[in-house]
Image (tube, rainbow, N blue to C red):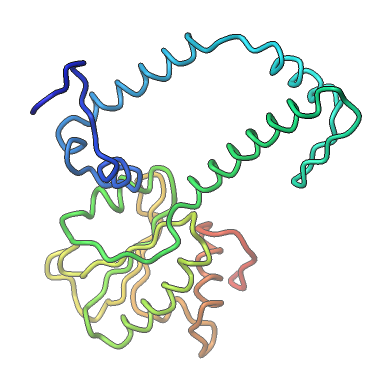
Length: 227
């Protein structure tokens, strides 16, 4: 593989974006550990070279002592350092929003190939819940499940929702068991549910009944109607 004059492995924005969502493509597929090691080194160097900022230290000290009233609306009063404090608080708020965005990084139901099962489901469940729906294309109950799960995925962007053809995930998977939903967390299969029956409340099969089952299994937060 070609390297630049600084002997570093340089990745493209596309490769970085795909890796963020768990897809090891391009240079990440062959040099993942080296790339991650570079980033650790960069962070260490940045921290060591960061210049001392007495203004930031003063503002931090005053915030910790309650010298500023800080809310989401950023209300700061009664200080000669208002401009410095405002800039610092805005910076902190931006960091909080970025962390929140990183956590809520899904929000869609994606279809994946069977060959991506380990990366997209097992490995991905290390940091978040993964709801995997095994389907048979064109089967009516599977289509109903996918439609409901699309809405649920949008409402709960901190959970990863994927669909996969059942026989691609598990060879010779029986059609009578689709749709089959697998709940993964911390790289472990927590629960497996086949057909629509476990997702119904009485005769109802809708977003509310699905959310109730997911809540009862700890996948999402909320009250469940199941005992």
